[in-house]
Image 1 (spheres, one colour):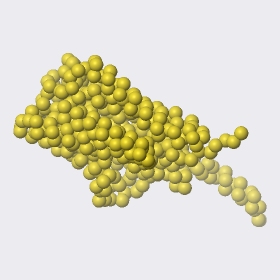
Image 2 (cartoon, one colour; image 1 turned 180 degrees about the vertical axis):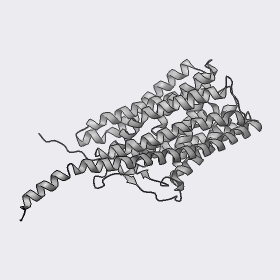
Image 3 (spheres, rainbow, N blue to C red; image 1 turned 135 degrees about the horizontal axis):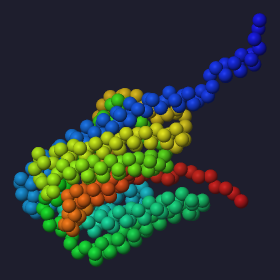
Image 4 (cartoon, one colour; image 1 turned 90 degrees about the vertical axis):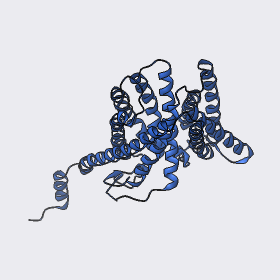
Amino acid sequence: MMVPVELATAAATQRDPAPAAQADDRRCPRLVPVCAAHATRDLLGQMAGRSLGLGILVGVVALNSSSIYWRLAAGGLGAICAGVPAYYIAKNQVSAEGGTGKVAVGLWTAAAAATGAVVAGLGSVQPVAALATGAIASTTVSLLGLNARTENERSGMPTVKGSAMFMAGGAALAAASIIDKQWIAPVPQLVARNLGVAGESLVIELCKSSFEQVGPSVDRKALNFKGRVLTSMIGMLPYVGATVLLNGYVSGLLQGPTDSFRYQDLIAPALVGALANAVRGSANSAAAWLMHQQGYGDTERDDNLRPHAGPRRPDAAVVAKKSAVRFFLSTCRNALYQKFRDHGLSVLEANCAAQAIYAVFAQNRDLIFDLMTGEGWTEPQLSVRA
């Protein structure tokens, strides 16, 4: 007997309900090995970088870290690693058109380079306070700019962002200078820490760039900028919590009550602290996948998961820029830690406080690089006509 086409179709639909939901169910288990792969890659890269960084630290201390030449070397690296990101951000996010724009970019770059030099070479925290405050002010203006509706409002946002950062940063610098008049850290080993961080940052970024697609991975670039921001915010709490617990508390306990500059005393705390970055890699990969599922990216793809593709040759320019951002943020953390110690906090207390502040900004390293390359909230918006 012939079965009507309509009845056959209805029966097939009843046997296979919610195909889209079943597809999501099939993709979710695939996310587990992806998160594990991200965590493993980040952990191994951190362990390699931290091991080399400690070696440089111990070597510089052994060669007399109080020498003015070490300070000059650290200050020079700081100037480059702060000035280069600032130049690209100012050029792509504020504007380099016309005489006024070029002057603004030049002033922005010079101020950042000076900040990097005194933070890395002298251990000053006043510029750290200014930069953090200015960054928060600029980010706030950027978020408010999402509500801009007219072309005139949107075109004026770069100027407002730059002005907000300069004014807020200047006010914070003045306040910090009044509160704390000591611009030079009294501990010469801080310079050795910063030089060690330079080697650590370079190795970590080389590993990340070379082995990014070894094993399954999430393609963060498939997200639009808003999706990347939301990914960073979702991954913020797990990373900050893990950083304070592992990099701050557990590492502080392992270091003991006094600051040591011996390799055998520092290697265990450093490797334990590396576990926090495994948490970051896992949480961020899961958040990036979730944001793609919510529509913040390439809608032509079912998901942004990638299969194993093997190691690849790292892009030297990308590695250099990302290493610069990592190095500068790490020197700010070191300066904060030393300032907390100078004011009487224990190793454990100073470690937890400095790591907590650092983690908030370190979680957004990828967004900083996105801004350096010219990305941002630049997607076209539909204007509603009255």
